[in-house]
Image (tube, rainbow, N blue to C red; front, side, top):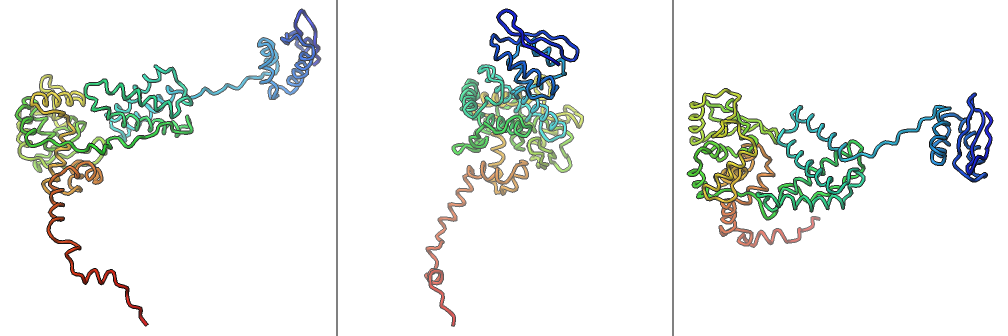
Length: 401
C-alpha cells in the first residue's frame, strides 16, 4: 500500500493503490500540513483494518464520499448509536405490561382503563410542549404537568375541586418506576403529594336518613340499583359486574370476589333487597352468568360511566346534592359501625382493610364519639383514685440489705 498527497485545484487529495485498488480521493483541505496528517492516519487505519480506533475520527473530518470509500475497503461499519428512550417507548411497554397483568388476573380491566386515562392526559401535555425524550422529563417538567392537569380537571363538570390529580400523579409515579425497572431512566422525576384519597378535611360522606328517604322515593326505574348500593356497599365496578350466579338464595347472601383487592366478600342480603332481587329474577328469568343490573331503557348491562350518570340523575330528581355510587359505600360502612359492628366486621363485608375503615369511616360516626364521651364523663378516672395509688407509684422503693 502506497499513498501520496497530490494537489489539484484548491484542495489536496490522496492517490495510490490499496489492495489492488486505485484510489484518488479528496481530503477536503487546502492545507498541505493537514493533508499529510490525514494521509498518515488513513494509512494506519487501513493497515489496522476495521478495528482501528481511528475510523470515528476520520469520519468526523474527511469528506463523506472519501470516508465511505476507505471504510468499504476494510469492511468498517459504524456502530449504531442507540436511540434515547422516548415517552412512546415507555407508554407502549407499560401498556403491554398492564395487558399481561389483566390476562393473569392481577389487574382489573377498570384499573387499566384508569391508568390509560392518565397516559392519554400526559401524552396530550407532551404534544403541547413538544417534549418526547424521557431524559428531558425532569422534576420541574412534571410539576408543570401537574399545573396543566389540574386546570384540565377543573374544566370538567364534576371535578370535585381537582381531587383526581393525586391519583394521576400516583399513576405517573408508577409508570416512571416501571421505566426504572426497564432501565429507560435512572431516577423517578415524579414527586408524590400524598396518597390518592388522603384528605384531612374530607373522609366519608354518608347520606342522612332523610336523604336516603328522598332517594328511595325518587328512584323509580333505578330502585334495584339504589337498593343494591344501599344494602351492600359494593364498589360500582363490583355492582355492575355482579351476576345472578353470585347470589346464594338459600343462605340469602352475595358471594363475590372483589375486582379491586381480589378479596372474597360474603354479604347478607336484607329483606328489602332480597324481595327486589327475587322479583327481578322472576320477571327476567336470567342465566347465572347474566349481570343483575341492566339499563332500564335499553336492557343492556350498565357501564361504570352509565351507572355514575344514573345516580347523579337520581340525586337531581330527589333534590339531594352530590349523589354518586361511592357515597352509598360510605353510608353502608358508617351505618354498620353505628349499629355496633367492629372495624374488622365492616372490613370483611366491604373487602377492605381494617386500617382503611378506621381511617376513613370510624372518625365520622357520631355514635362512636358519643360513646367515648360517656366513658370520659362517667365520673371515674385517675384523679378519683385513692392517694395510696399515687403514693405507691411515686415513692422511692426501699433498698434491701
